[in-house]
Image (cartoon, rainbow, N blue to C red; front, side, top):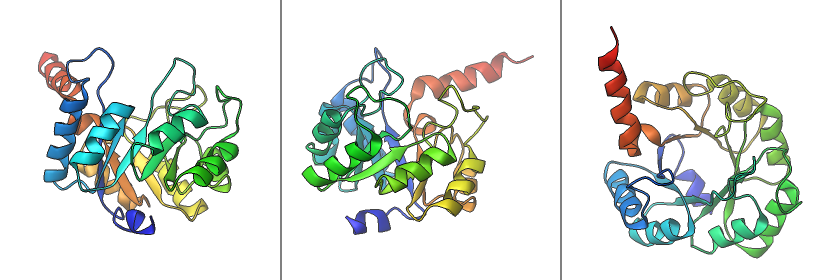
Length: 225
């Protein structure tokens, strides 16, 4: 598994996820999107949902970071240990989960979840966090890598216009595990600046794999006076 992380250094991870009720919300479609991203040079794929993960894992030859978004509680990214184990059993190399300090639906702590997942599976764990304190705590809890995924998406953080490079920089100085920049990376320049800020790797989703959002950006630009 160490080789999995080594292959991500300085590279691009593409998030292939569709929102609920969208035409692209289909395992076969997401698998094709993942294959296209790999053909373009993606070093890894991040995806969600058991069917999507099982299909993508069989179709691509790069590492897969898997998660399972479920429920409408604040913690909904791989919210329980059962979710995390199920994700790992799809064959993905990394399980991503909510790494904040908020209450989890099954009552377990992040540390308990990570420890048990490590005991039961060979998967690495990526903690999706929103603050420096959460990232440090997640690493102390056993996370193998930490992401800025939730920065700006928790009630107590401010959404920056682009990636939260300040958080990337602070985390990179504070922890010894890979820091993954994720969230609002909309341009190649954003991605390059994330590496300059200390990110180990960069996740891009919407700007590559979500046609509805990208189309909307152009439509909005054409409507400006």
